Image (tube, rainbow, N blue to C red):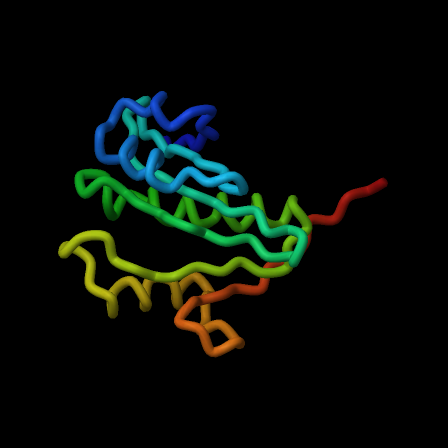
Length: 138
């Protein structure tokens, strides 16, 4: 079972590769999450909250090679979409950049396209997805 928890501090991460990414990616508006499978760290998400412009930004999704093709990446992206929705964002943006040679740019672009991401309308090299905002019963 895949579980996702927010990091309180990047140095709390046990896995050296994920910890290094978390330390490098930490900025003021970032929220960081670690995915685990049966208690073992498997993946990482860095999410930037730009809800002032109704936009969530996936800064980084990374899955350790030994946990790839187990749904960790999909779970992290779905988590980011839900988080963006709860923050009243109407879109989620990202730059699809492979972090190692085991994933090609074409494969990564296709992976995000299958999840509803399209080239951003502003002509940048980013991908975006319109998301629906969670409805609250006030």
